[in-house]
Length: 171
Length: 418
Image (cartoon, rainbow over all chains, first blue to last red; front, side, top):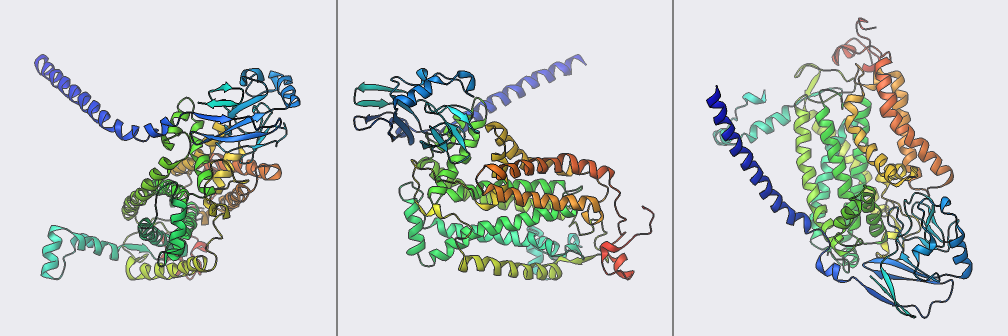
């Protein structure tokens, strides 16, 4: 019985090797078909936007489009800044200090997209004087942090920089 | 029997020996069908009509529609105003989706009531559920194509459901979109898949009917019958003519929508072109997805809501194994019958609150409704199917009728099983 078993093992090896090579081949063929759905080069190329902020009054905000997504640029009033900074971290579902969410406390720059299911929240609405998402009822505060509702996290802060006093570069 | 069928003509015999299409056609016309099928059984034929109608009108619309974010919205208006009979074809297609779902819900609840999902018909049921899932995906992608406000924001909300998946959620959403938001790449791929899926559905329908023809139809009293026998009639002409009559009534209602209220089931915001900067005040899906939307919003947690919403559909696939009653038809299950109608009311209530804002009383109803929905399948059905004392079941379809009983469900067998 020893000999046929050995023969069987050699054949098993050939089978396993063939299956492996076959699986790698199939995988390598399928990958381009899957990856073609990822963002293409022309989409990735639209990576940054510059915004002139000299016309924005305190308490007002503008919404600009970056990578097809709205970005809120809000010039906050002193009360709004004070309100955002005075909140205890224990009261936040997703604890983040206001200081960590802004480069200059007067300017809040964030993705205007509810972290629940991607709607655009309405400004100066909701129970925390910040934003309110009409889709499924998430309330955000003056720092764009989630306070109440189904959204799991605070609104995202994109990469941005102050080019000079009047210009912000997003991306 | 059709297996031994020999065509009468010489050419027919020559052809059938090489490709037995005539044997198949003979099988379909002779197919023994329970003689007590009621009108709830006509929806299979109606659904076949709906699928074919959607495919034909869809192919025609595809000849005029432009799948591009800058042109899709105006190409729909072009179809409505310029294309000969374009308005008619588009209204048939858009209302056809609603009629398709109306029919499929009746078809599903008929299976639930008469126990058509029970052994030996589990595979028919699971294939049906897969068809239903594909229908929802197809309808959702079709609703995105006009590129109106509801199209755009519906697509945003639904694709974002995948972002609830831990770790890889965001990458999956970006992959689905082909960008960083719903945009032109999303529209073009949805058009491509919206064209493909109906043909996948058609393939599954063939398997669904094939699987049906192995055990044969269930029937209102849910008993196994001898085939062919005194309890059966040939499919043609008995069932074909009954199906046709039901289809004509269905088409009359369908035509009523098309000609008198073509937009009543749609949302007026979808006549505003998509704008990624403004979310409509109140996003609602099409009516046929509302119960699931209510479940999604009833849960105050993102991942939890998504899991329950998908769970509410997938739980149906386990139904054949959750129900272990010895009796198939709810006709003979007096207590379960009450819970069945409670489930119907529950799903309708979920649909209603799904269309309302998620707050106050609506939210409360959605939560109670969600709890009952799952309790029905996970607690009520398994427990009741084990403990309920069912009524006696007739031994055959003919027995109670020939015994002078007016309604088969009133019949008692020889009281052996009492």
